[in-house]
Amino acid sequence: MLGPMDEKDPYALLGVARTASDDEIRKAYRKLARKYHPDVNPNDRKAEERFKEISLAYEVLADKEKRARYDEFGAQSFAQGFDPDQAREYARWSRGASQSPFHTRSASDVDIDIEDLLGGLFGGARRPRGPAKGADAEGEIAIDFLDAVRGGEVRVQVAGRGALRVKIPPGADTGTRIRLAGQGDEGVLGGSRGDLFLTLRVRPHPFFSRNGSDLSLDLPVTLPELVLGASIEVPTPDGTVTMRIPAGSANGRSLRLRGKGVAKLGAAGERGDLYVRLVAELPDPADPRLEAIMKELEPLYEGRDVRARLKKGAP
Image (cartoon, rainbow, N blue to C red; front, side, top):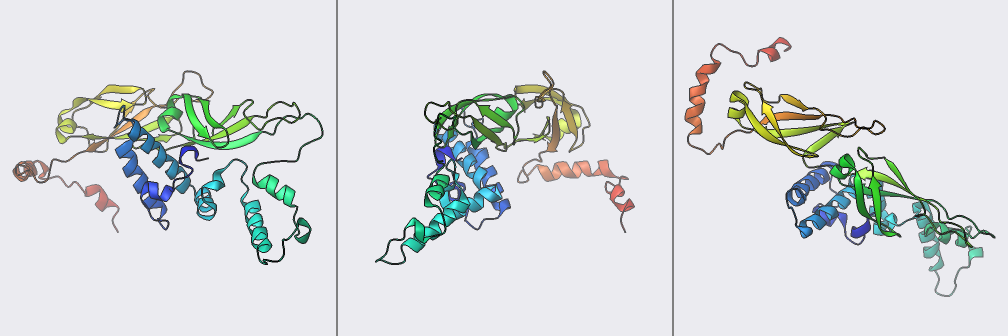
């Protein structure tokens, strides 16, 4: 379900061609997500709306099945109850019905039940003879990464049902299924409404990545911070914390922040960890002082083969 971007082209929103590869789509999304992410643009409603639009566009184009459906049917393919097979059958019937300007084909002229076809295509059904509970409905919504990690109530647009408030359990992930009682199809002849079951799709985060209940983050650091050690601020889903980098840390070293990961579903109070990988940020190569400093460092490597371990396994 696309919600607010139903009438917008996801390709145009991400600035990619319809022939774009999965990698090109992913790179375009990450570039725009970093630019418009709410963490980078606090209290900027326009940036927030833009971020939601590009996230929904990525939701469509990153999924092979959804992308193929959009390419074939456009935004209507995400309407509640849409059936692609019946849509194709209806299209074939419509083309057949318009072949001759002198003859309008009736339902008896074709080998399909038009009432069933149109009813299934647009989410309808034949009415039973007495009161009956409405049918349960299925749907999919996309939520932000941190909303899934933290949990809480989010407001989403659901096609055919407008804006709904959905309670997200802490630690939810893509595939988590949520039931909204009484939000399904209307009952018949006084029957109660059915339920709405929403499957979550979690949008990727520009900085955090997830593995089960653990999170990971690449943290840029300076060479002096690696060599001399330092206390630095690290972003977590719960806010910024201070972490100590031990002196003499190697580039790529991973440090663990216990309990700063994702809540474990079904395990009250338990959370995973946040693994912070130190990534050395080199000085500006255009700085004229850099060459002299590097030459001063060269003697520190004398007698040491930094690639020795690679030679051991060389053919």
